[in-house]
Length: 237
Image (tube, rainbow, N blue to C red; front, side, top):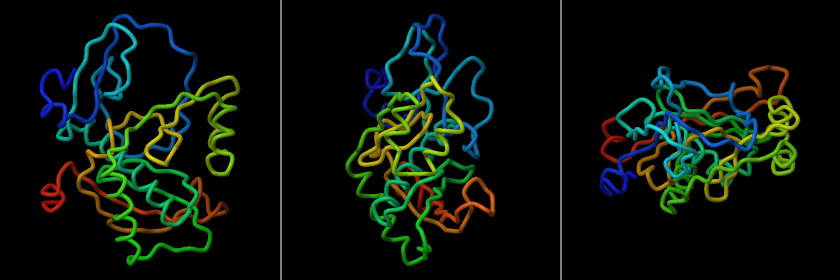
């Protein structure tokens, strides 16, 4: 629909908002495993509307709005997708186990377990290089609907994701994940159509945290980033 208006217009859009007047029956109860983990979310999405991937098929008759980076929901989606790009970079560069990667009011971060590794400022350039590689690939964000059992199998090598699934997804329910290049991550979405929209990406700082925010849990490395649709916006920032 956006491309039907113009390719330039579509290129500026980040996400859709839909308000259904008639909707087809769904697959069943879908539970967002990251529901309580997100931070810095945008309040006040238009009443009756829900955020929707621009590449996701519509599920009935609806009113549709398209949202760019200059609107709060567009910025949140842009930075949420950028957190997945960051997570992919951390997996590839350090072999880390990802835990939690939300957008914030000023960008995004990702927590991950790296054993005894501590991220240092000299690592920032390596992380940015991996992120920029993924952006150049224009890898699509693909929404996956999974049963709890399939999700547990998919993330069996990551005990942090297993804990999240076991504690937040009821038996018999479905959950969602998103694939982005080599990364598959638990997530409710929505996301950008592809990573190529992230034209400017920077790692800004790092710190440590604890899994679940509890000092008796594993110590994690937290890496913060910020991103924009073009390099001029990053330079201005």
